[in-house]
Image (cartoon, rainbow, N blue to C red; front, side, top):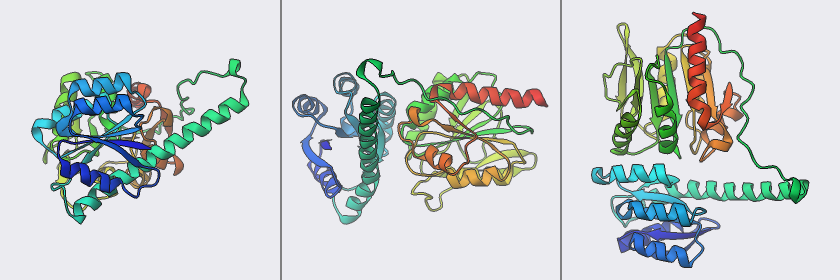
Length: 362
């Protein structure tokens, strides 16, 4: 797997190369200090992955990669810098597979280990995905004559069981790698009269969640905002967890409000989906939660979903075929915690169907 490192700083180019050294099957085959030089190198050498510093991002670069090098995966590496957060969010929606937070300094063992621990699982996932696609291609070719090979279609949704009776009060979504683009498809597709609050935990660092919330708010008929302590969990409002803070819910009298917690990371994440899901299970009555696990690496959300299922929640997982990374949904599916597997393009419709069905039964 050949990698091109793009960063305007020599020290960070060297640090990223050192972080990738030793990851099986990964070769740093080139570096570039600018987006324009990176595009020239992409045209000359068959790279598989570009590590792109957020300071070098520009719209033309991402457009060129998307148009001319569609097979190349892009991983954004950058700090939580307010003036660059909107550009990075656009990159995540347009082309980038994942965002990795850059260490504050381009030197030292701690910086090296931080970067390596963030990059290693991404490259492991890319390698696994590549091998899986190769195997599927070989099997397809062996089983079917060329003229009879079927065109792959959308993943089929499992037969939907009847949602359990009870008053749905909240929708909770856990999502990670591939999340900004998926949320841009999902949240604006919800109608303006959607009757429930929506709570979202997305694995993104400080500053970026506020930018994404504003972007979603502009595109959506529902109000979308980054969650703050004391915010009411109100119908028709979408609250996105802050980067760097766990989000929870608690009751204050008859009202449910948001709480924030800067405690230790869970599943290497803060905010963590498990943290929110546990608080929902403690705060809401039986059958009151519709829990959704979407594209993402790792298994954050699986243990929290177990807790919610004890309260008879209804759960949806994003289908493997429509995930950027089928990690978090796979963990829920493999544990037998998903009631339905749903394609991304059908997710908003299915959420609305379930909510409407439950309201019609009351």
